[in-house]
Every structure is written in structure tokens, then in C-alpha cells.
Amino acid sequence: MINVTRALYGRTQRELCDGPVSTTSCRSSSSLSTVRAYCQGHRTCSVPASNSVFGDPCQGTVKYLEVSYKCIGQSCAECDQICTYANDDTQCFCYAGYIFNENGACDDVNECLRENGGCEHVCTNTEGSFQCSCNPGYLLSDNGFSCDDPCLTARPLYEPHRSTAYITESGGSTVCDGGLEEDWYRFTHVGGTIPTSCVQSYRCGTESPVWLNGEHPTDDTIADRSVCANTGVPGECCTEQYNIQVKRCPTPGHTYYVYKLVSTNYCEAYCAEI
Image 1 (cartoon, rainbow, N blue to C red):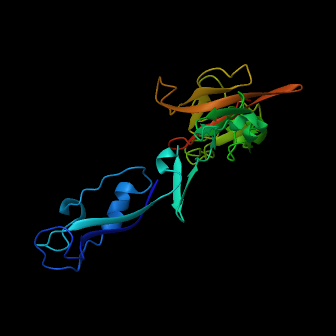
Image 2 (cartoon, rainbow, N blue to C red; image 1 turned 180 degrees about the vertical axis):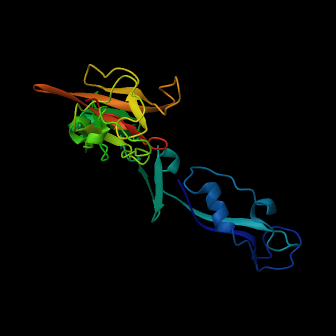
Image 3 (cartoon, rainbow, N blue to C red; image 1 turned 30 degrees about the vertical axis):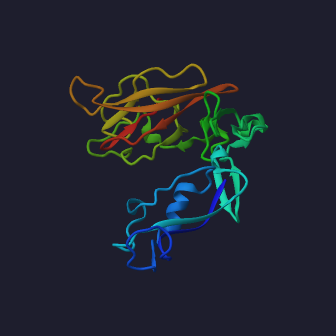
């Protein structure tokens, strides 16, 4: 492998190379860096001794190229991924997630083979990395490794006025989900489920109640659903729609549901069945 130690493009002697000489104090400041760009770490190289490569440090003078170099061990061309050069030595390295094989090339490391990659549920190997995922019904936590059950982590919503039995006075909405933070929630009052049929206006502590447009899931996976808002338009019970998620949570003697709710438009509010 070539290690360039010195380079001069210009002229410091009259005797070398015939032609016009107006100065012998002529050198291109980019001589070394240019030659290294062509040759450093290679087994062979060719560098044109030309003004088009180095620029013209002294017009009217014929110039030449002098190079000093050493041949040292490994070539960067032999490195599969990363090559470093320091103290006249070249070393090859692999990116994170790779390891040298017996031929000196870099192979992908299957992190999932060791303690499941640290994943609580499912570990999937990828090129140079891996990814954790969760079994159906669970959510990957912020740390990227553990899995959360929304049945256990849902935030409680205890607002009795959300009941479908609660009649809202005109202009007197007490519940408004226009600023609700998107998250998993559990209704911890009354029946604890969003009704699956149209709810008439001025119920649930709001002028515009929101109901589930579909059935609740019957298994324990996380299901995509849509909800509708009844904004009081005659003959229309679904004038606004939102996409939410629902999970069934069976416990001994009781089954409840949790919902990943989103913020609504205006002052609409999610209802809870009595």
C-alpha cells in the first residue's frame, strides 16, 4: 500500500526537465494533498503532472512532479467497510452491527440470537441492526425494548357527565374533547364503554356527542375503529368522523375496554354507555 510522505509540483532546480525557467522557487501548495488524493492507500496509482491537476504556481516556467512514498502493509482497498490510517499504518473496521468473518469481510451480526436482543417479545434481525416488536394487543414502549399492555397503562377518565343519560342544557356543555391529548383512556364511571349507536344531541355533557361507529372487538388484539360526532344536523348522525383504536380487556368476572382517543374538532365529546 502506498503512503505518500512528500510531493512537489513546481520547480526548485534548473537541471531537471528542459524548458523555460523563470524561477526555481516554485511549488504548488496543494502538491501533497493532491497526490495523496490519487495514491494514498492504493497499491498503484498514476498522477498527471499538469497545471489542470495542481494549478499553475509559476507561469512561464516548465514544472515537474516529485513524489516520495513508502510501501506499507494493508491497503484501504482491502477493507470491507471502514479504513483508518495513522502512524504509517492502516486498519480495517466494521460498522456497528457487523463483525469480521474468517476472510476479513464484515458480516451482519444477528443480535436476536443473544438474549433476544433485549426485546421483551419479538426480535427481528435487520441488516446491521435489529428491531423489537410486540405480540398482538401490546404496544412497544418508548425505550424500544419492552411492551406495554394498554389495559394496564390507560389513563382513567372519570367524568359522570359523559353518561348517555346526562342531558346537556342548551349552551351549557360541560365536557369538551377539543383539547384532549391523544392517548389510551379507560372510562371509569358508569358502564365504561362508548355507545355503538347514534347518540342524540345534547347528551353526555356536550351539544355534540361522539359514538362508536361499529362493534367492540371480541378478541384481545388492538382494533382500528372510527367514531362519529352528532353535531345536530337534521337527518345526519355522523357529521364528523375520527379514527381511534380499541382493545378488549378481560378480567375475572368482568370485561372492560380501553380506547386510544384523539382530539375532536370544536367542543364535541366522547360518550360513555350507561
